[in-house]
Image (cartoon, rainbow, N blue to C red; front, side, top):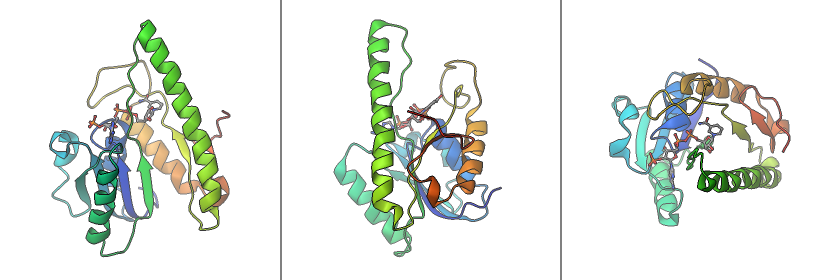
Length: 190
Ligand SMILES: NC(=O)c1ccc[n+]([C@@H]2O[C@H](COP(=O)([O-])OP(=O)(O)OC[C@H]3O[C@@H](n4cnc5c(N)ncnc54)[C@H](OP(=O)(O)O)[C@@H]3O)[C@@H](O)[C@H]2O)c1
């Protein structure tokens, strides 16, 4: 599967799209090591069966704790003997679809946070472009939860989304940096 290669860190890997991406990346021959960041690795039941492979390492990682972020990068640096990461995939998030006033208000906050994320992507992409580092926001599509959670709405499976995202990533180049795209690579205006 696909020509993705190197060492990859995925945040929010315990379930959802992060977990599906880990499983899909395990099948990519060129991928050397995958670091799956989970708040509680002992609860990452859908990944533990792959842990015996040298390719996957579950690491304790909360994106809200600066100390956790520092220690994770130290741990990865040591594991890779200084080789470094080739890709960071951030899927860590909290999202609940609630059909109440509270849910409505929360989804406004959710939408605002996504708009901020897309703007942040555009801003930091400019900082890193000269270093040939791409920064992209990708919408995984309308996923129904087939591994861990209840069904939100009709849609695609986590595995379909993960495969399409990986296929799209392999086709990107530095001129795409800063974009917000769907899982097929089409630019989404925001
Ligand atoms: N699913 C969809 O249909 C859909 C559609 C469009 C966009 N998205 C976006 O795709 C992203 C991932 O969505 P998803 O459906 O995969 O979500 P999910 O199934 O709810 O999984 C969220 C993941 O984030 C982790 N997480 C939450 N807070 C964290 C923290 N502080 N530090 C580290 N990890 C943390 C969770 O870990 P724990 O297991 O420890 O809670 C879990 O692994 C989100 O940004 C979402 O908005 C999803």
